[in-house]
Image 1 (cartoon, rainbow, N blue to C red):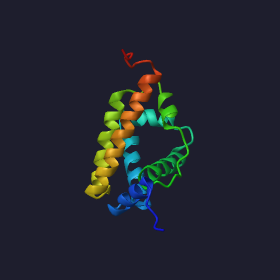
Image 2 (spheres, helix red, strand yellow):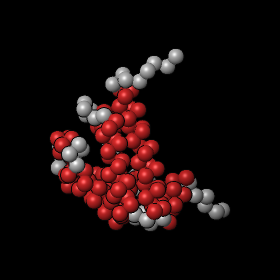
Image 3 (cartoon, helix red, strand yellow):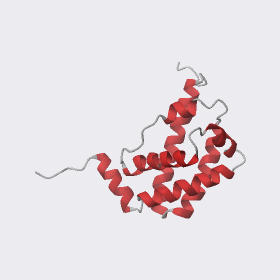
Length: 143
């Protein structure tokens, strides 16, 4: 009997086929958050909110992107709860985050890998923003 690949295996295979590897993820995460730390809008928020230190946070973010892109399952965390707990997080912060992420993607990744990362980042950003708005009671009621 032949093995039918799961959606997870297919996605991980597609990511690997366009050059997404653990070293690429590490390079992307470290380069991107180096930019974030220097950014006048995002840097102060991250510096204030990262309680476990940047080395621990970067390792956690490498695990996150490895889980998202390569389906490794290494990430253990609750991004929605963490982001929702930041009272001054606004949509403009997500826009800036995506701008810096896209800029870093273009420098670190192949165009195909950058497109895969960018699509996931857009989806994650939208999901986080909707979840935060819902928790804050900022969504209009469904009629």
